Image (tube, rainbow, N blue to C red; front, side, top):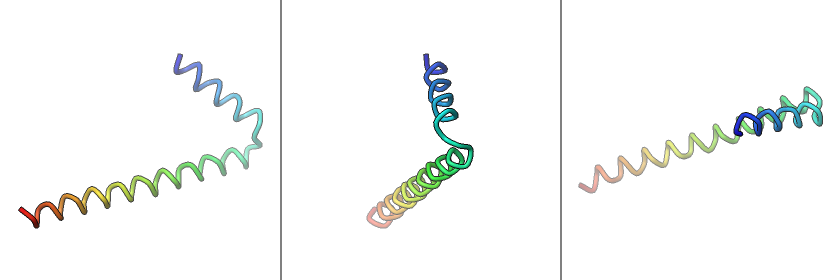
Length: 55
């Protein structure tokens, strides 16, 4: 079922977007995921180090 959904989304994307638009969308999504992950790692490190000082 998950493969069918993935194939459907891929097919829909290929039919509706030109190649440049598809690549642009992929890079925008990748950029935002990268930003979110970096912020999450910084927050986790901050919490770890701040708890270490209080103990």
